[in-house]
Length: 99
Length: 242
Image 1: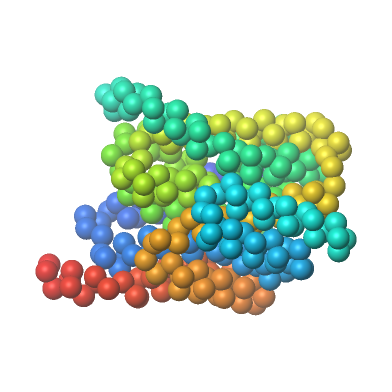
Image 2: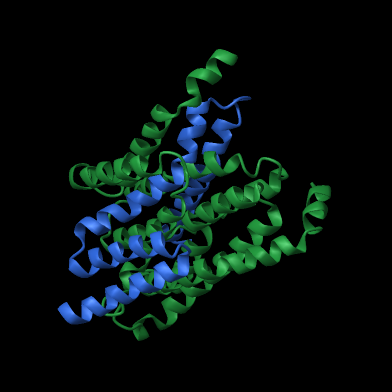
């Protein structure tokens, strides 16, 4: 097997460890402290924000306008698809105009 | 274990609902599946290695970082370490979603954790919020189409990557941030949502500029989670009870 394939398999094994690791650590405790509970409930918003923020920081006008559209549309309309489609439309349109 | 599976199979509606919930996720991830296969070949991987990577690692961002480093011929341990660094946030997913799937059998849980990527984590949290429990049937219905498509897309991207349109003009390179923003917005009813989002945004941007990518993800996430833990109001009263 190639070195590349070995690197991929070791990377896959470590990735799997991260995916079971948090549960293995937490399941050793019989009761979960309310602060830990509150922290865990914040995980989705916290992690997903870090996947968006640097893209916004590095983005130009089309990218920032697209994200702003997404925020407004999801506040007004709710739901994923209206937000996703309008945001992508603004992005493509402005990229063609400024492009 | 077999009894568990039989019990879960008694709810075919869950599986069907899971399949329906997987549609927007599969669509949003699709361009990146193809793009990964195409870029992998461009960076010197074979089609087999590209498919192997999608099938075993199954984590888009870390795969992109991985092939970028393969192309630069850096030391193997550094590539492995980078993949681990990008995927370290999964520790938090595992701890969070582990609470929702604790009633599954051991093999079911192993399979569930293997498939616990960003969108599956977010969808499972939303499902738990709206339905109270996350069943194995729903989870597999949502996760398996995503997995199968992801692997097939890597293969097709590797074979036909040169036919891909210009990703910039079509906005494909920015679809994932938009999708993730949509997920962030969908959690806005949770306690401390706004302070957590602001904290994670500011800290991740500072970390991105100072420490560098991919560590900004873990650093920004931990800052937001720590803020929520600090702000939790029930902490003191609950402690007095015990």
